[in-house]
Length: 341
Ligand SMILES: Cc1cc2nc3c(=O)[nH]c(=O)nc-3n(C[C@H](O)[C@H](O)[C@H](O)COP(=O)(O)OP(=O)(O)OC[C@H]3O[C@@H](n4cnc5c(N)ncnc54)[C@H](O)[C@@H]3O)c2cc1C
Figure 1 (tube, helix red, strand yellow):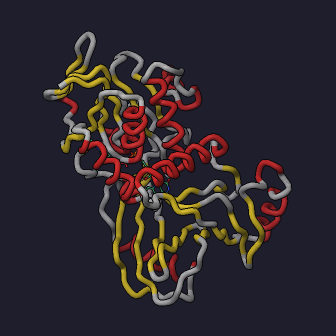
Figure 2 (spheres, helix red, strand yellow):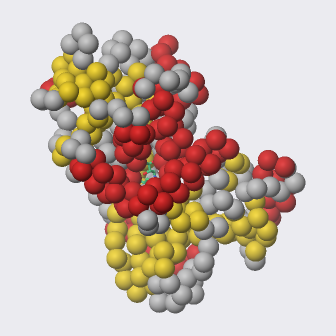
Figure 3 (cartoon, protein in one colour):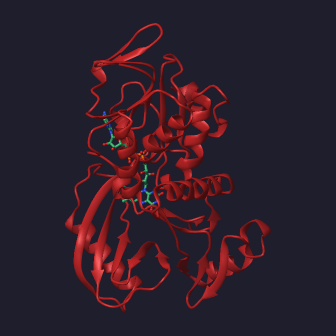
């Protein structure tokens, strides 16, 4: 079977890259190992334009947020169902200094569209919300299946062979392979030298007694109301271990956070407890580009804890590059590591 591009991994990164390539009529195969190590399926899909203790704009938010909104709205129109849910975030002030910082930031013209009014012990963040990552992944997988370009399998790197004009895996010959394995990149013999900084995290889905607030509440951890009695609470953050096994310690930490963030809504039941690994990078920027010595292989990865915000913009840019219509975005090009790679 011939393809122009073989994509390994169908998380948010592989899915959106595949989508954009299909729009360009690229002959494509996507392979995924049944989401065995999927951060995307675990993620709450939050988009928060203002982050950190210093209340700074998320990196490249001006470019990435409009691209993300356009992409999710376009999918909703095609699929006739919601994918992205707009919701303000109520960020609780951690201290008097943070309250003063918010007041100063609000005066900065480039922050005004993201910072709302004070509300009780916090302030509102605007242009925020969450992506239903599961629906998006399953929806795109259906599209790929209908077009006959999806394979359920685990790619063993030893089965990949290189030839002058192409690269082969099993019965597939492709001009290029693009690896989108999330934190699985650490097993990839061609890209495991990139400075990945993975971090494990856990999330609970809870049934609660009382009606929940309308906004997402954020104070270190966050509480995301899904409907009147269901909420997600997240997320823990650990450098080790890097597996997808939920822990009793993580569960307790999140139950405590729920009680602190929303004391009026006691927990009735834990509906789900999930764990995954964020594919973070040491310089907090994605890994996008082609291998310096093997031109047939590329990488689209390193979206850390911000895949829902960053991936739509960079998937389109990378698809343009792969179709020959533009250069790679410089700020995320893996050639920035060429000196020590
Ligand atoms: C607890 C937690 C909370 C998060 N919350 C948010 C959030 O609120 N907002 C946000 O934007 N982001 C969040 N993230 C981060 C988000 O999940 C990532 O940015 C994004 O999902 C990364 O997508 P990806 O496609 O690169 O990786 P993944 O989703 O991990 O996808 C990689 C896919 O490749 C497959 N694969 C790997 N190796 C192979 C192989 N050899 N052969 C075949 N298939 C393979 C994997 O099984 C998987 O399906 C969170 C992550 C975690 C863990």
